[in-house]
Length: 325
Image (tube, rainbow, N blue to C red):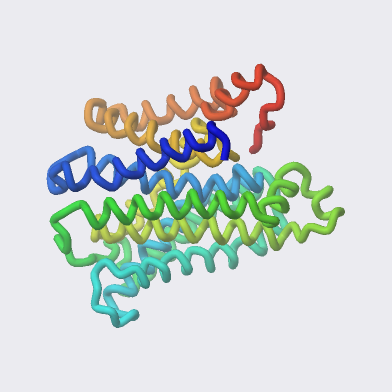
């Protein structure tokens, strides 16, 4: 291991130690810093899920809020009907089933869409998925709670620690999963698809299989995030969990940090969660306008992301990774 890698590993270990120790230092019932990091870690996991599919595979999805919502609703239905039989409120098995439900939806939708549509048409197809799901959930009657949604018992935890540490684990797991996939043969196939689908297919890559696989893993982590948010908010309803921001914010975080990079979504999520939180506190009336303006600014002036801009500067403008969709 060279000196640079040792320095990076040491920095990561220090940051992880600080993240683990912070809830034991601050008041987890009233500290906004703990809530902020809970939200930021959740966005890291969401951004990494989108990054795997868009940044590394080159397929832009506008329907991640649908997977997020499915994860939340599976959690609600499983808990209300006690389908796991564990009796736990914060049940890891329920969260896994929620992620699995979102992954299965991604497979069911991905096979027909990814085999027929590309580029903007596929993106619009995934956007339509969210609207179809909204209608189905509202018309779902007592099973989905209709427009009012489902209610989990409030106040199961007065401390933020369970939610905080779960969000931290999701952020670490999603980042580790992306790292492992990208460095595997699957990652090589995804990179080939991103660069040129026809050339990848001609070289023997099963394009549809790998795209659906990436879509499913992406949906799985989005579903886990939805499950966690359901436990935290305890009220699961279409307007809150099918909000397009659950797709747009992770996209913006990836674009700002640098999609198709491992640390880009982490940096983007931490920075933009802080920006949006401050804007929501001090500029609540113009927060949506502010968010929209920020999206335009980032797309115009930082299309490759901050992380790639840094790499380009270090290489003197040579050898930088080419932009991905």
